[in-house]
Image (cartoon, rainbow, N blue to C red; front, side, top):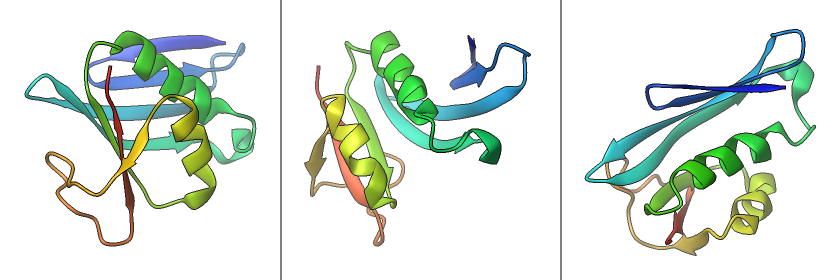
Length: 106
């Protein structure tokens, strides 16, 4: 498995160099806002989102990180990394009516 960092994107590849998935984020006022993730359908359900989120946190552990998530089955994974549910809006996104906001504070 290989992880590649490009501008505001983390990409995960398997051993055959096939893209497993990616995580996109935006740096706003020295804080991180998760913009979205994608896991290739043949790799879903294998914990690869956790690898990508772990890489984001590891490389930005000194920054506040925000996530808005609309998939309740992912909430537990997000909270395992130290994120807390918040009622506040997220920079850039504001309030998303069908999502739950999370915040990581170093």
